[in-house]
Image 1 (tube, rainbow, N blue to C red):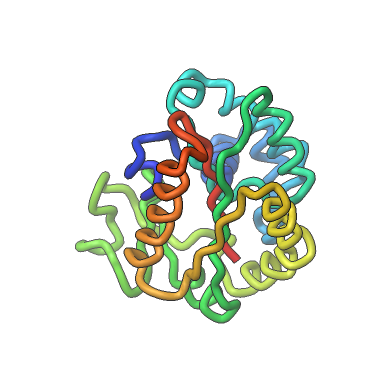
Image 2 (image 1 turned 45 degrees about the vertical axis):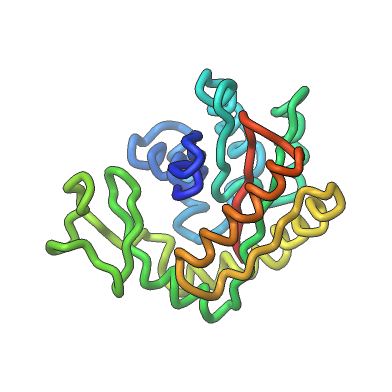
Length: 213
């Protein structure tokens, strides 16, 4: 979200899109709900269809985008390449964080149900779990329990970790150490992106995929 604000480009969070579909009880939402409750990855064909619709919108074509939570598998990365043709993704960022730190961070995470602003049990809204920005209710997501998180981490090792080699082989991978303050991690990402842009690697509109381990 901060990258999209910094570069003034759309933020595409597949998790948020799926949760909105679940809340609206669309056919896609009903199909995805069982997977999300179990902390499992949504099947590739569902996610790719949803992302493809979003990438076809005018703001993406003119400004670029930041992907958040996608792709999660090599098959999704291959599908993304097809969706973007004749363009291509500019950069993939892997935020490397130890497992126990991931568990602690996600278990403490709280999210506004209306605008998606993220808080935590350490960094709460000013008033009674009411969003400081929009006044929406701030809650713990159903898939942010420790059991669901551990299941997602197991899936990450088997299905998502190979993406590191995929993007490393294409020369698009940047690895960031995710231990430290949010500001410090964000500054590292901006430094890497700007250095590549200044070197002529890419320019606006741009596509950046941000992920964490």
